[in-house]
Image 1 (cartoon, rainbow, N blue to C red):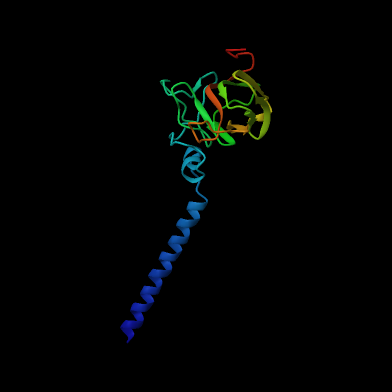
Image 2: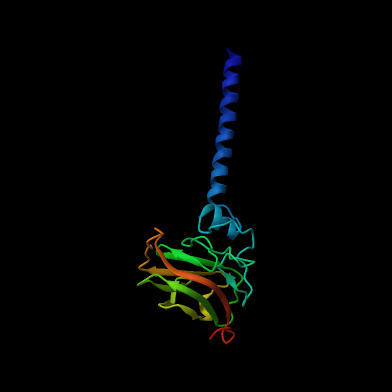
Length: 194
């Protein structure tokens, strides 16, 4: 009888230790201090592809290619993008995002985007870190000013294209809006195609 009581006490102690351990694991999982890219891809599900730790770092002036024949098509796409086609990539739905890190916040910058096509009646509102900076209504290369106060000390930048009136084609049921070939960030006055 004494042995049974001793066994029960040991089982309860082991169960209590396991419960405390599991609660600790859950707390660490919810409050995890992880790398930005890991959190965005695995936890928040805001990146389309795993790009590795530091994969969002960006060098000013570096082209961000959206076409499949590029030797380095972009991996910084968030939600709202189709797969890269031979010449460009379509936005899908009403929101498409791009992510950058390591952006200096000490000077004005320019976001440059080369738009190859728009669906009929479609346009895109360009938003940087939650602030509207312009609109795309036609094909061509567009420049949008990013004032130096727009980028936080962390150097993180989210560019969002808010698509108005995306639509499918006869042969493609996706709600497409804007077809982007290339984008880049540069210092003000250093734009390639003014």
